[in-house]
Length: 93
Image (tube, rainbow, N blue to C red; front, side, top):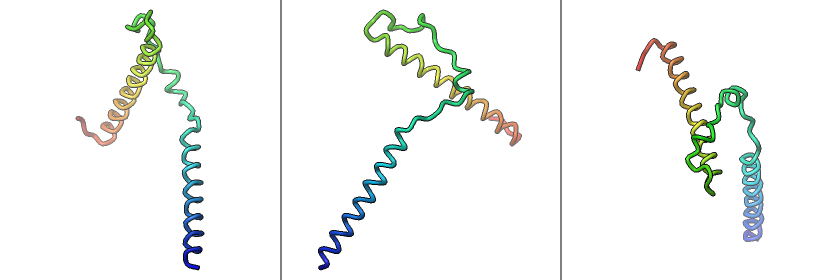
């Protein structure tokens, strides 16, 4: 009798775990909107900066340029945030 109760409890726990994992997976796969400020301030790199242009890896070079642009935007936002914090606290680094 105890084995049946344990088995039922284990099945309920596994079912709950499966539901939670499914919900987490769906939440991770949902599309996230890009803020308007990030989309408008992005300046794409020109094709001339793609060192892999004309090769089979040209798409990789384009993606690399996009990643560099995103990193530059993140760096600029971090500098602005640090300046705002420094101005608010009256400190400088």
